[in-house]
Picture 1 (cartoon, rainbow over the protein chains, first blue to last red):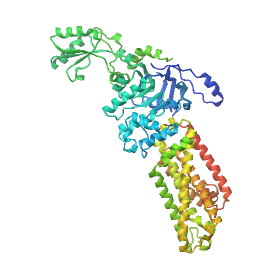
Picture 2: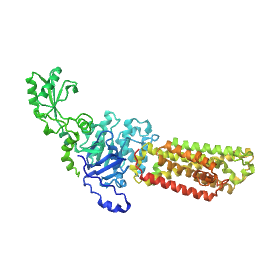
Picture 3: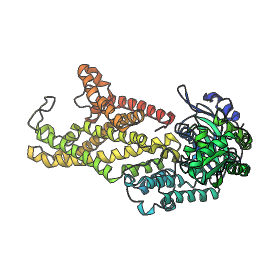
Picture 4: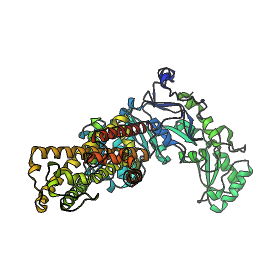
Length: 372
Length: 261
């Protein structure tokens, strides 16, 4: 849900530091990541605007939003790389103003894998391992975990993008983290590599590690994540379980006439019955997509039959996370409507702001998530 | 801090970088020693005659190294600026800060690693310069007996420390430039442009500035302040103040600035 919490100015005066600590909000005990009114401004532009995040412990959470939404800025703030302009954030129960208190339990790869190009993969990890006071055996272990052991002694500059990604994940796994933060972890991986990383992330989350994954591959997020944080223009659009987000959306029925030349006639016919129909040209196989719940399938079949149009197929189709994301973030024309407003007999319209739908549908989940 | 020092040495110790820098300083030291010995019987850059008796004194063995102290300083400056700046441009600083969130410890460890690196490089340059001087001195009629004496060894030690101090001074400029510009190319070019042409120009136009400009003071320190208006101790003290200010500024910037690259 959109964050409405007014931002508090950050307390920076030395004299009030002790008082500021006592004034800090207290994150829920089950929160791996929690923020309240977290804001980051660059001049007059709000890159991140009062977002309230709650990622539960042990969740495999996806962090999605279009380019420039503020994902990386948020991650940077959570990892202590940049300071928030206002608001509070907590990672593993510790305030983000004091990253030294929690970063030993956090593994992260943000803005892609960045390593010294002249060093081997192993040497790059050894460097980070030394900083964390870890031995070389942990380096070998993580290299094996990501399937990079055989190329560990090659220079980083000679690695493919996929191998660089694996090394980045290995670096994040070095400290045996309680919280793993990954930015586009499957970027550049081939399908087999994507599957491996997907399995690895599921295994890690199964082992009580909290995984927070920023990704543009929404099909991946849909497959691996049970929890989702969606932002746009620095504002929180939705957070909660993926199933709750998808359930809040407009179900569709896809009707495929026996002869594709009947598609336009069928679309017009359904439109005459007050149904909202996607333009048939959107569907290259001659199908007609109607915004209607699954229960109205029989009625639609009858309407088609009455006009002498035989249907070859009739199936229910729920929007994917990708479609939901594009609608919510303004990537395509909005066709998302609350389920209660969709019926075969009542024409429906898109909400003015697609985000309204998400916030409406997600209220329960975000409230349960501890947002204020 | 020791963890950061040891981690930084993985980067500094990679063969191409280590031996590349070593080759550069050894070449510069050899060049300095050879040209200095070959200039016996001629006049130096400032028009002062270079004589065999003068070169035969205990401090003659280090004349070659001291003559190229500016170049060794530039190596120190460039290495430091490039190493610190590259951490920003390559994005490796992000990983390092997540592994060592105490920023001051991280930078202190990096600085210590660079100091030990420079100590190694200048030690190699000193040995090579002394060896080259010993090899060429007989050809130019320079008596090396005094160089073998305890006084000669002391001069070698003093020469090493002076050139090292000067190079570390230059390296401090490189550190500040690296942290300010967060890019190796910008840091090296701006710092070198400041330390060499700019300061030289200013001191040529307004000679009293020579006693205050950091790079000029480092040159004075490298040669034991011989031929300079300022006393050795005063030069050392001023450099210490400048370096302390530069390190403090670098630490504050490193600790407080956002890491966005």
